[in-house]
Length: 508
Picture (cartoon, rainbow, N blue to C red):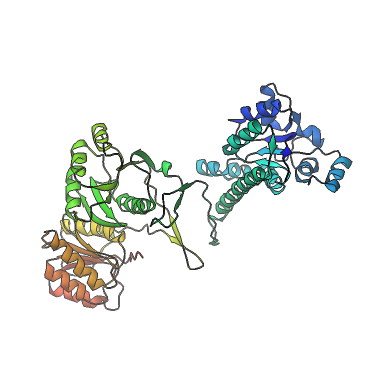
């Protein structure tokens, strides 16, 4: 299709930054500019002639600005196909052709994030702007639609390089971007109105997208939809991969449980915590976490809730890792760690945890509330005559947090706020228990006086028997099995303390 020359433009924007270069270029090309309100004043301030939309429509801006451009003389000029029948009607009603529409939208999402005042939020639902965008984008074969200041560079290039002429491919691309803007806007408004209802319609829209090197494997494409910069400051290292991001998400999830306490360190591998500990200092926490499995730590994701000092950095540097996350880094520690150019250092700014989770499967999507329940000693129900000691209670609470973030079936063994062994992702809870015990022994841990946590109930007493024989002295589990009493009876007979939480933490 032949090029279309921009001869007229309608400009009405909320955000004015970056608009001056566009307006000046349109003026250079002798484009007739129509505008309203604040945008009109902005253009006039540049000493560039502009026609008022209200002079075109013979109607002023009314209803506190709610109605400015909603008029046939505006929408007719946008929606008319540049063919004989439509052009004849434009002539009959004295409607000018509008070749370029530059419109953005009221900041609805920003307003929702900054206030709970409903009247303020409602006033930021754009009516005229969204209508202009949809009209101009629909008629892309004849009209250029720019719906965001993010598209100003593309428009400016077209104005400069093609002197105001556009190809249909240019216009279609801008239309695509415009419908992306409008659909995201509508989704945000729907979700605001839908927040406190029983309607669980699945509508999600994330504007920011980043292409990754690949997905889980090199033959798979991968993308991240979201704003990583809002959560992390990348201090050094290569770009995060798909697998890195999955592991970083798991790392933030477990450390979020411990972020406000004493120094803690965790080592992640394939989304599972293979080492974690709480200690008086970050260096001690690192050594205790690494001791949990110094083999799996190779190539892992490391995370701490405390500042990384130089001594800790020097010890961490002795192993190969992919990503190190912390709320801060001492200047000398950061300088030291940045010598390894490919190692990724992330300063976490926001311990954000999604309240709802979803994933695609079969021919649809499943969605659920995030598992935000975390049990502490106050939530434990003692079901044996033997009570856990103070240290055992502390370890049981720590073990529950760790257990919650491992794949089912899982068993966790903890002593002195240190993960000694875990069995996760097993098809049998007995296998998980055996694996946890075997792993703890493999790395030289003494299980006498340790505690055990299970993500779900024990259908039989076999796991508590294995734990008892290994030296475990206290157990925490959700309870809820018809055979609960069998496990309780075993613990009672063998002087093992047991508490239940009433909360299952399956993680598939």
